[in-house]
Amino acid sequence: MTTTTRAYRIDVEFFSGGDLFASDTISFHIEDGADVWIAAYLAAEASTYFNLRIPDLSYSFSFVPSFPDDPAPTSPAGGLKPVCRDCGCDMLARDSSARWDVQRQAWAISDVYDCTFCDLCNAESDDLARWVPENDLTPFDRFAAALADALSSPELAFDSMFHLFCVDHALAHTVEDARTEWIEAVTQRSSANGVDRLHGREGDHA
Image (tube, rainbow, N blue to C red; front, side, top):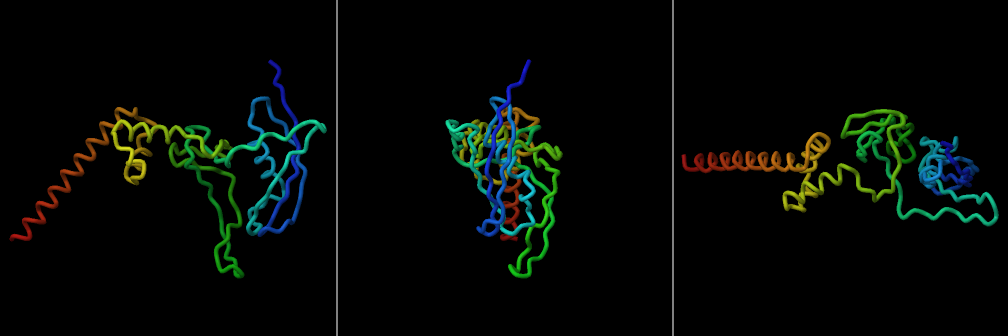
């Protein structure tokens, strides 16, 4: 089966502290059906001018039509975020190094290393991240929402202990199993707190 690809070009401007310091025209190819905006962001960040050692680095780009009648792709609503290729989680991290900036009197990131780590499934790879629209729900988001719904407690979405519980259970448990374990954990915690309070009252009367 033949794969159809499309060619695009972007004009990219790079800024340091809001001041233009370089411009570049970059060509790239994508398969039909792939997200052209994600490919464009990746192409821009592959430029030699995209260097995180540059203070307050930012960039903008626009598409160069292949023909006079070709419209630019429709801009996506919002930004992008990286998610894990293995589990779909957006809790990704990269190691970096920082140097002291005397003029700004602050630590400034000087390098970001290629290897990406996933806090949920512990995967690590130089190409672990794939880019999706920032409002996309991850499998972890859907698991946490379904569990809060099963517990009839939507306010748990803002509970840090519940978040940690979901981190431990999202990959290896069903929502129903996790619901049972959460109820048991809360019951045990409530019983322990009740004993502590009882002991405190007894101490007051001793």
